[in-house]
Length: 375
Image (tube, rainbow, N blue to C red; front, top):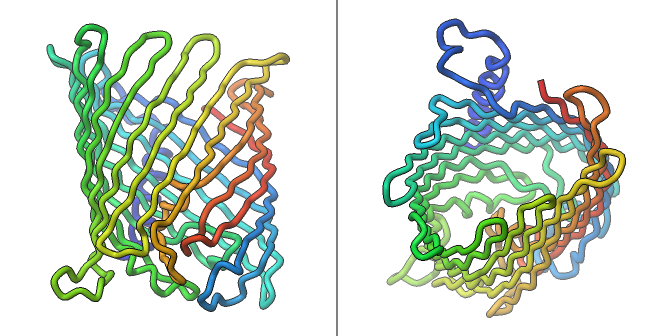
């Protein structure tokens, strides 16, 4: 199934289900409960800069700088089939649309449109020794008129992922947890990136961690992920297809009181039977949320990442999504109620991340105004 079919199908399911939640459903109404339904709409202006001198392959109509105005609309909701202290079963729906008007390119201006949809099904069961949970995620993205860099938009894809997690009851105030994950992803190539089909992948992984604390909490974790790319060759008859092994090590601290504060440090080490994508990366992440004066609420988020490739190559194709995993991002959001069930927010942000070409970075500066409605 193509990424366009994945994105369109699951986005449609999400929007239809989200809309049906606002309509009385007869006998089912007593069994199904909607939570956290919200709709967000807004506009933003963004500027993009890139160091395209690092790209040594021809790119049609790329430029060193571009600008865009974007309008977006998104919906979110949770549908609970079972909602209890010891057992729960719920469906989370997210769907969104962004329409850009971009300028600054040499050949023509672009008007990319991005549809995204995610459906998450989760189950949780509390037992005597701890909590067992499982999750299934279906995700789709469809992008039309995708522009070249530096206005980077992740390409169209469809993905299915599953997870099984265990969180043990405290043992001498220490809470141990473990999780197994699996994923398959299908990408759709475009006019400017015909090799995106090579990024189709399958992955399995796991993570274990240990945490202490109540009002404040510190957690140490380590994880492993094995990824295979069925369409990428290695020119080695004995080992013909690319396989990556990724190890993550990290620690995170959280304080939850009148304010929310989180700090995390994580190292990522990627090794492969193909030399091009091998790298080491270290990131520091911080989140701060607190109420201010005049009913304002502030959210400040930042992550700074350093990345080093083990082997310098002229052409290193990245996995879409990997550029975001290894990005540096800072944004500040101020939010305030303006009417019953209606909030307004202003957000400023900065991003520095790789495109889908290794060592080719773009920078994004953005300012947006949004309205958030809760029925």
